[in-house]
Image (cartoon, rainbow, N blue to C red; front, side):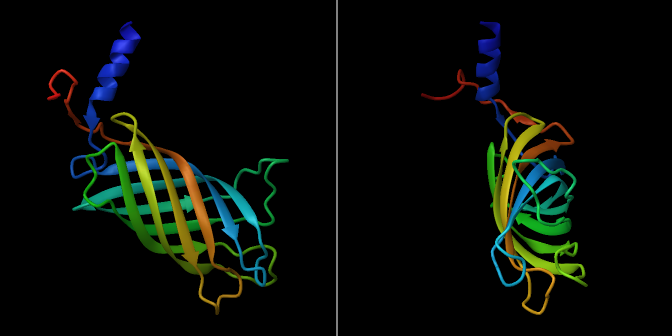
Amino acid sequence: MKKFLILILLISFATNAQNNDNKWVVGVSGSLVRFSNINRVKDWHNFQAPKINIVRYLFSGLSADAGITINALDIHPFVTNNFGYNSFDGNLRYDFNLSNNHLVPYLTVGASILSPPSTIQNSKSSGVLNIGVGGTFWVSSHWGLNSQISYKHSPEKVLSMTAHKQLTVGVVYSLKPRERVIKSFWNRRW
């Protein structure tokens, strides 16, 4: 009964997400990349883990996000990557000023520097432009679940990389406990 009461109380609290008082959030996730241009990189899927990112709230629903994706884990026999995929990402996020909700959707735009694929001779690191959508579901004052899908556009003149999509799923942690606004079911108007 005690656990049930605690669960009800936790659910009845609304928590603030990343906002002006809670500026820093770190995250770790897994990433799945799909390449679709068969002329350059073939129709491949690559799995990367971990992707580590840090996000800083700036103002009015706008945040800066920096992340690094490292191809450190292979999951044999389920996923076999055809080549290593490493990237450094810099993005701006806009969350429609919904930072105080449990579910915080956002749009993102930015750029990435990608390591050269080992399958193309004499390939070099390349830059791509990013656009994407994502969301964070805050389950407590510190912890949240995050998912994001990005389209990474590579200019045609870059021969070592093609446009691709990246899906990330992971957990985020707010470095400062987010304030709670008490809205218990006893105080709600029915």
